[in-house]
Image (cartoon, rainbow, N blue to C red):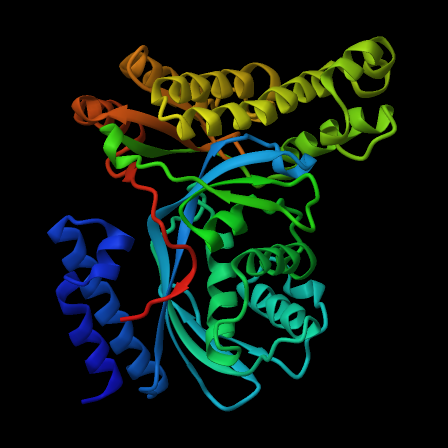
Length: 429
């Protein structure tokens, strides 16, 4: 029996303990995932003609606490979710990496040239090249491989499809060439480095860390080169609440909108600079208040309001972690709502003033409050200005909540998720 046929047999229609860890216990979902893996395995065989393959899975992530805190060295609370990217991969004995992602053209990366190429910014190939270059710099082995990838982490969903892809590539290289020795946090740091330097996009480290480590985690970025990651032992399933992410659409890639997004970390850091610091984590709110008359002349008022949001949400993460560790879910939900209000009023990343008539996040939050007030929690999810919102919905309101939101944003816009314990892994069957 071929290895591919053997793997399909071991998956056993989804009735495998690891599959239940990754995707839950719903028989229909497990069967769907089994068919998904089988199709990707057969696609790999048809595309590359190899059989000595390995399976990999890398989750998306949801930001639960700490909105726009990571880029100013703050704290976050995040969780890996059951929507994932999966890969079938095998060494090919060359210096060429060949990747076919479902729905995208196949591409290649030549490992004999690992220099930065700005003409390749914003491409998947640049990410793969950057990760390979950084791993080689750090003394890891790299080599050519073939891979077929299929993604269920929607682009633009706020669930971090790019970070999931990055740590998936890191896991593949780790297991194919380094006996799985790449630490999950180092995998995340390398993915971020590649995105910053080879892909051409500045980003924090929360997304990659949550995808790579898995489970429910809190991360402290006070020293961003050595983030402190702590796993939380909390069973969300037992709360009888569902985590629902809704894709409300919106968001723009025009220069004005990109500048508005970039203004968030820039304005926060501008306030810190007026106090002789690099980032807001290095100053206190009391220090800012004392100097507001002078600071606002240099930065404007919005920067100070965003600093107030940072200080509040950064501390709120500590309090959310304490609430979960003490099994006080009601207190946790209250703080989720507080975080959402702070993002709306002070951080001001809910709608893009350049396209002020399009306020999809505001509308989604209003509808969420209408259904959930006093019974759940809701907030902007991720970067803002469009994209997604997050809600914790009691099971008896799930149908009403989904029907209300999908009535406005379209069928399939709501994703009911759970926090998965595994990060970016080789799927050992």
